Structure formats: structure tokens, C-alpha cells
Image 1 (cartoon, rainbow, N blue to C red):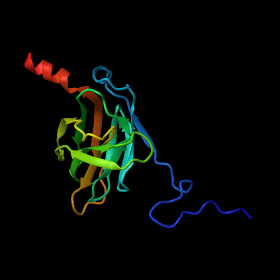
Image 2: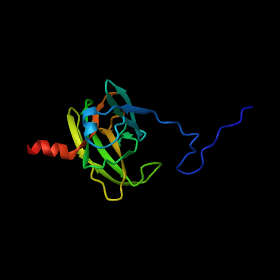
Image 3: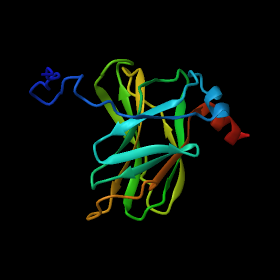
Image 4: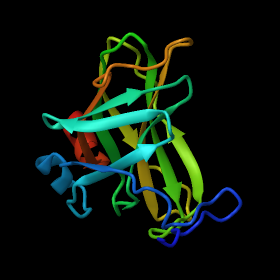
Amino acid sequence: MAEPGPVAEPGPFKHPVTEPREPEVFLAPSPSVERRARTPRRTWRFRRFGRDAAFARARGAIHLSPRGPRYAGMQSALRPLPTDPSEVRLTIEVHDPLVRDASVRVAYYALASGRPRQRSVVTAPPVFAGRRTRLAVPLSPPGDVVAFRLRVLGRLVPGATAAAPDAVHVSRVSIADIRARQSRQST
């Protein structure tokens, strides 16, 4: 008879062996913008955030499908903060009228590895159904912060149970130096 596998420990946290590994989706940054900010050029790795969402990569974008009335979606891996004043830029399109809104949040952390605690969160204005928006979220963390995560979340209208698989499109994610944009605007 086969021996049973590891059992989840009591409490809110499960044993690492029994938890299924979340699928990750990669999105390559825009090369010209990513070079301007002095951060390592890496792909953006996203994983699911919350239980009520599904997402997949298609045609250079990530398609997000919220599945409930509470915010759920995807979050990036921890990334080090750039040394220069920077902002995260991305394009969000909400195609499905069942999606109440989509939101972008930047969460700041005091440690750059492991499972650090979140220090603060900045939320960008929501994007509503039928809209396409290019967002720029400034990275302006508190003093003791060294890393951040980017979260893209969506929620459904009351009474809806699921959105289309491509309800929210996320594309053109990059980090840009704010000073470069300000110097172009002043000339």
C-alpha cells in the first residue's frame, strides 16, 4: 500500500509540498523604455493574486478574466526599486461589460527576497468597461522600502459569475525614468 503524502499543517498556511504551484506568465518589457530607467532589463513575471481570476498570455498581452465581485487578478514577482525617480507604465483595455472595473496597484516591500511584509500600496484610478487607458504610476515609496510588486486586478458587476477569457488586456508594461519625460515636456 502506498504511503500517504505530506498533510497540510493546521492553521492558515499549508505545507509547501501540498500547495499546487501557481502558473506564471511572462511579459517582455518595451526595450527602449526599459533601458532609460536604470534597472535590470528582465521580463515581467506574473502569477495569480486571489482565487477569483484566471489569466493567460496571448499576442504580446496578458488576458485577465475576473471571476467574482471582489478584486482578484495577477501580481508581478518582487522587483528592486530603480535608483532614479521612475514610474511604471502599462496599457489596460477592458473589453467585457461584465467587468465592473480594473485597477492597478503598486505594493511596496522592505525586503527584496523571500516573503516580506507589504509596507504600503498605491492605487491608480480604475479603468472601466469599454475603455483603453495608458497608465503611468509613479514609484514614490516610503523611506524604508527596497522592492515593489505590480498588481493588476479586476472585479465583476454584482450578480455576474464569470467574465470572458479575454475580458481585460494588459500590455506594454515597462519602467520609465520620470526625468526623461519631464525634460521632453519642458522643451
